[in-house]
Length: 227
Image 1 (spheres, rainbow, N blue to C red):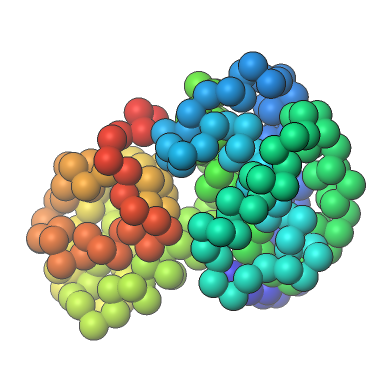
Image 2: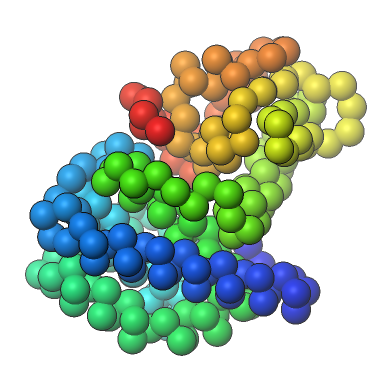
């Protein structure tokens, strides 16, 4: 994600602030015990470790230390660096970076995408659904859809349909149409739906030639996230 108009930058900062507030408040509410649960969307991590990663992304972004190609070593580093900190200490460190992150997000909305996607991962882990209909989620969804369009370039168009949002990768007759709830499509294009779930969304066409494109943000889950 790269910077855009002033209006888009203002929206991005506002939505990052709102997501930050929600995640901070949820983490403080759950505390150490409440965050000691596995995250279905990131099964190698507990919710506390996921929080450490979210804080680490913001820290690296404001410090100008974002890698060109994020990898597992980078994300593991976020967890290891904060392994001995309490939840309150992790959140306090995030608060110290907040103003600098906001300035960074105005030019590079990438941290917003990470935060919005992982907020939903965190909510799923602790059983607190919410924030599914925000401008920030819609912004991240549209950017993820653009990345999906690049992934299916050279194939027949891909079309996604819901009651609230319809999108097509490029002009022409679709080779695949998926129809589902708007939130499910958002989670699908951010690699948070199983192959079986994707197949259940097929309204027309063949999923197989497009399946790899839905794993652009990581392997598809082996089990439903139960959202």
